[in-house]
Figure (cartoon, rainbow, N blue to C red):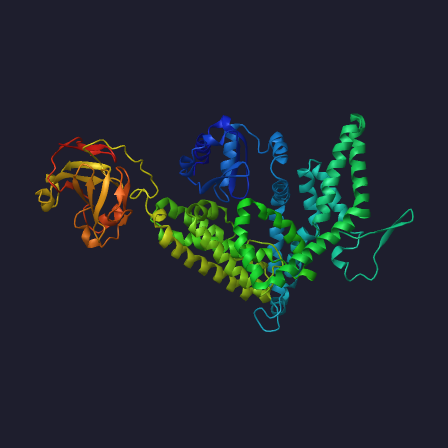
Length: 634
């Protein structure tokens, strides 16, 4: 795969190197900030190799490539444009734009997206530990460790690896958040380490502790409790640390800055953390986690259905990134909350999107769409939905509706059965490892409900409303809008693009004999049939293969699409008009699936004859384009 060529084409189709302000990528998308978004050639960009979808959101032009490809293409884009992966001025400007809610969501996204791989790794390892230690999973009353005692050491090691990202979560968040807030990320990591120092009472042991250790600060008792697994306190502390550091940099002489600023930043922030910020926000975080779990449990099936229905629309806005903070808190406090309901709902949404895309795969005749569906559908089932959503379901619209209905159905089951996750992981089919083992069956049933509902609804909606979107664009221009012609008197316009010959050269002897009338025969190149005259529809044949028209000048015209196509019983023809309709020259009369005619072993030759004896002179030889002047009536 030539990533250099792909990158150069992307640069070209978004308006050139000078139009790109910044370029970066997330897990699946190349994100471009442009000077002028009107310069983007979206159609050409969509056709670039490996591009699975394009869209504009949050003032970024986003090009979907998928995992493993996007980083390589981004590297080439940065190399060819001479840009760096981040742009401080752009970031600063972005931080001040948009409404407060979207700015807050973006901040949370920027903080949590970089650390999600570490949390996911810990979550999957936690799920693996659950498999090894769960009682009665494979044999009644026994765990894998009971059956194979030699694996006990391995289970202990896996448990240690799984717990580390959550135990030291404040270190990860401290580093990422302080960097986002404009401070020194290493000071943020150091502050996170202070919050989980071994000398503090472990936060996970707080509920069972008989006494709580405390420091005596000039007669003031300050609790020495750690912040393992917390989110809100660390976010607030990181913001405080970054702002203290920045203000100290402004007022401290340069010769003293490197010594006093880190010292005072850490000392002041740590004091505020253990005195006020930590205790208040620890309680707020616990209340938030408990409150959300209570609300979800109380609403039951209805709550799950509503959340499942809205999850994909929320994902479109990017607000789903804010769930990471809530979900981490729910999992960290699983002893009281039972676990996270967000992860199972996300899994229902993802597999529903994947199932809708796979349904489109088996229905469409478009080769590029089929290729896109194969990769993006499997990706969605495994937990990455951007290529599926932005490349397929949103573009076709009806599969997106079907997918959110499927997500709602599966999520209702998940909520009704109180299925919760004990860890974060890949929200899709592999997500079962993150679920409490006793709920595996309910989770699996939810996946089946989501996928089955999504597939059935996709088939129903696409057959009823979206057939044209599935037809090969080489044969049918499903959405092409032909401009109506300002028809000249006594002129008959070409109803199709293709090769034109006198009707006497038609392969069908009846038409060649001019028994039906004189005219021409067109071998079409495209499947859009338009009206050659202004007038009205005299008759649409029941088998849809022929249409009779009457022009304003009294001419009566028969258009017979293909030869012997009456035998196809209307299957390749999508007629847009009915008997008695008034029509304009250039108006679309029919969409034709030319491949279906050819596959039936029939000719696509289309006679266009004047049946009431009007004489004419031909205005075209050999080749004709749709809506060209074709005949002039005498």
